[in-house]
Length: 531
Image (cartoon, rainbow, N blue to C red):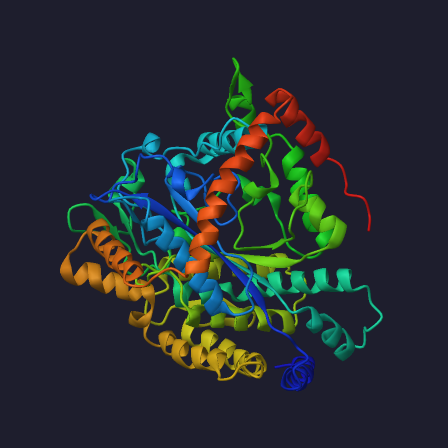
């Protein structure tokens, strides 16, 4: 640990003990396929009683009509976020009949590309734009890849932290918006350096159903049961080359050195044509195939393990929102759904995430060089594909070292950060999480992926059958506890309100869709007005 790190940690620990630091705020987004009793992706539409997927603030769909997406509000206590997420599941089970929410990241049984129905958001221009965007994802990457699910963890640090941190660094007169953005980009760079640890500790997708390959041949798998392919050493197939990846986007070379560079890179990607997408076309014979023929249709198409975010106001694009007021929070996007847990995530994992992200803020975080970028990509590849191998080696600045040694060194840095966070708690949940999770470094069988590998291999059981049984167990868990009555009434009312909001949007649609799209991209090309 550097003198800077120790000094800042000491200053923050004093502030936390004095009650001046405040609390981290977080929200959780979780996806989950609806599946039928045989473990096949549902072909039924999103249930009307759940509200409009276009306008409901908490229950929507992602790519597919069958891919539920739950979005919690922002909470200062992770338990509150998890309880809200649980209630969203409970109200879902009230209306989906015999279907269940798939508990894993890798999808259930599929029947080819067309068995993944694209979400329909209605006839308003904004709803049509969401649908056409998804049609574009189909022609670019296929629907099967879009059926992979995950968890996004959105985090913002307490407002009081920035002034305390600036004072500790002797920068008390700095513009706080610029300072905050600079530090959030440090978090992102350091997260990319250390994110392999997260994928090892919580990776939970070592198996796929054969239908996911849609006839493709792949190597390195063990056949289990009738229709399962098991990668017995993999931590996360979702985050591997087999999962949610895009080779075209590798051309972008986003390095997260500054906000301006990040914004300009994405803006260039939205305006730069790509030959293969030009061949597809956009609107052909009156039918929309994709929103544009550029590297990215819109900025949200950019895939990354973590990215800077700000709430987008009306008529803003994500990068314009960042330009106007800077980074507001960060979104961690590399989390598998843990099928061993009813919610796919638990408090222990949230406490570790908070500790790791806070450490990434306080650790030194220079710009990532080309050489270091290669190491980051290679270490990530090794962990997601071979993380359960005993004595797996990772690349370090001074040579190779074992995953366990590298992880334990990182845990030593996390310990004082956990103590800072625990100073605002009645007990020590962050330190307790570290003490439990460090055991996984020397015993991969304790990881979610390790447990799943054992369950499937020892019983020669199909992944779909195993996961479907877990889904029914989770459904029973939700049924055994009641939804909060006030929240229940609120969610029922929101469902009705969301349909009214969608109807109003459809009634207010006064310009043709092609003109709407043209106006959107004309606006997107503009730089946001300075603060």
